[in-house]
Length: 306
Image (cartoon, rainbow, N blue to C red; front, side, top):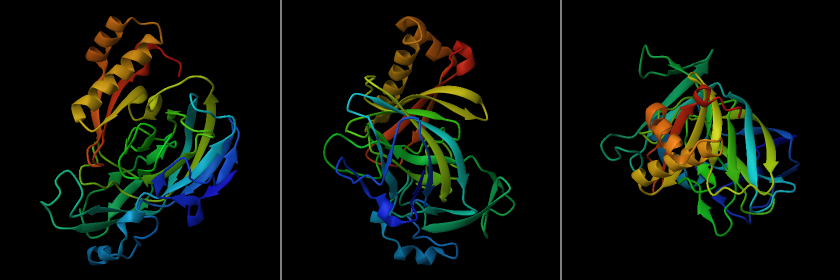
């Protein structure tokens, strides 16, 4: 099965339970998804900084979907495996005047990158520097139960988490709030640092293959632990999403404690283990008003088979 996000009829710009499904699948199915860059094809390879005024920022982070999962109901958990992430042959990064952790301190700037042989090289910028790519999806999530949410801030069902741990091989758990779950994907990145501090990563397009499974009757309230396979090996990861960074951090750690308790540890054992081997990261600090904090523990420490 295939869903083509370069056909803009398959793209939406808000999170809503009323978004019309663009593809129907069953648990266990694999889907190939073609995803445009976060400008939704507005930024072109030959663009310069002075062309940025042509961009409609309300069309950023257009999400491909939603994908309706048969049998999914409120109170279930959707399990998404990122089996393949193949990024495009070019990308872009930018400093925007009204966005980023240090917004207002620097002039606007657009940087175009060539992506080849596992590296990104900027055109006429950062000369002599090659960035090793580590592709992931900045946006992935399910629909909220009520209302209509903007694309940019992350929310309790996922969305624009900009979490660089969501690499190929990751297994991610999402709450199901509505019939069919309504899964959507967007915002491929070739590389990004923790926090995405300027407001953009190396934004690019991607061909993604996902496998979607369903856990009936296993209710979660926010995106839960997943396994990320990256340069540090398998990691157990939990996230916290909140308007206050410290509260987001508390949620991330509490979610890990609950995950470890589910594997047979006491609360006290889990909390101590978190303190001595865990790693707390600011995954996203720019998608106001919500922030994402991740907490990781190496899988080999507790011998969990995810």
